[in-house]
Image (cartoon, rainbow, N blue to C red):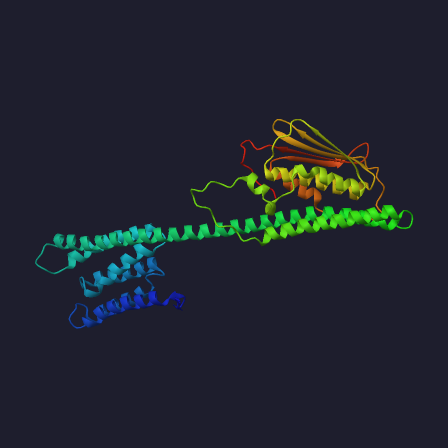
Amino acid sequence: MTVNRTVFGRPLRSLAFDVLVSGVVALLAVAAVVSQPGGVPATLVGCAMAVALLWRQVHPSAVAAVVAGLAMVQVIAGWGPLAYDIGVLIALYSVVKYAERLRDGVLAGIVAAIGVVLAASQTVGNAAWWAIAIYFALVTGGVWLAALNVRTRRLYVLSLEERAATLEREREAEARAAVAGERARIARELHDVVAHSMAVMIVQADGARYMLDQDPETARAAVKVVADTGRQALEEMRRLVDVLREPSPAEPPATAEPPDDAAVAADPEHRRAAVAELPALLDRFRDAGLRVRHTVTGEPAALPPGLDLTVYRVVQEALTNALKHAGVGASVTVTLEHVADAVVVRVVDDGHGRPPVGPAPSGGHGLVGMRERVGVYDGSLVAGPRLAGGWRVEARLPLPSTPGTEVVAA
C-alpha cells in the first residue's frame, strides 16, 4: 500500500527534491564566496536564488521573475556569470514545464535570451563575445526545448487521467441509471401483479361478506375466486423473485450469436405474460363480476416478447381499474386492432356496475405505469371518461420496423 505524505500541502517527495535542488545552488554560492567576483554580496544573491527555487513547482512564474531580477542585479554589479547561475536555467526549466500558460514560458525564454547577450558581454576570456553568446544560447535553448518536451508529455498524461476519470464518472452514471431503470421495472411488475390481484380479491371478499347470509353459494364462489387469484398472484410473485435472484449471466464471446427472443420467452423459467394468455385473464375478470366482451380485428401479427407483454399489461391494468371504479356487473369491451404498422388496444367500460361495498383505493400509479410502458415503444395512450358514462383507455403501439430489434419494457 502506497502512502502519500504531504508537508505544507505538497507531496513529500516533490518537496524533498526541490530542497535538494535549492541546496545545490546554495552550496555553489557559498563554496565560491572567497574566489568569485562580488564576494559575500554575490553569495547572498546566490542564496536568495536558492531560497526562491523552493517554490519553483508551486509558483513557477513568480519564481522565474524573482530569479531574473536577482540575475539583473548580478549583471548591473558587473560580476559576470557565476557558478550559481545554474539557478537561472532551473527557473527557466520550471516555468516552461509547470506554468499554467505556455505564454509565461515564452516570455521567460525572451528574457533568458537577453540575459545570454548580457552575460556573454561580461564574460572574461580569449574567445570572442559572440562565440560565448552562441554557447550560452545553445545551452539555454536546449534547456527550454527539454522543458517544453516534458511539459507536452505531462499535459498528455494529465489529459489521459482526466479522460479516464470522465469515463469512470460516465460508467458510474450509467450504472446508477441502470439501477434506477431496474427499480422502475421491478416496481411496474410488482404493481401489475399485486394491484390487479388485490383489487380482484378485495372486490370478491367484500361481495362474499355482503352475500354470506343471503346467498351462500354466491359467497362460496366469490371466496373461491379470492383463493384462485391469491394462488396465481403468489405464483407470479415467486417467478418474479426467482428472476431477481438469478446471478448475472456471463458475457457471451464476441463471435457468439445473440440469443433468440422467442427462445427466451418460451423458457418456462423466464416465461412472461403474453397476448395468448388474454382469454384466461378475461375469464378471471368475468369470474370477478365484470361482463367482458373481447374482439380482435385485423390480421394478428407475431409481436416481439416485450411488446407482447406491454399489450397484456395494458389490458390487465385497464380491467383492474374498471373493476375497482365501475364496479361488479359493469360491461367492458376489450378490442385488439391489428393494423399495418401498429397494434391498438382499446378497453371501454360503461360505468354501470354495482358500486363497491368499500371505497375504491386511491393514489395508485396504474395510468403512470401504462404511459411508461407505452412510451418505451414511442406509442400513445389516451385515458379518460366517456360522455355516455364509463371510462375509455386506448393505447397505440407501433410495431418495430426491423424484426428482432426492440426495447423490452418488462
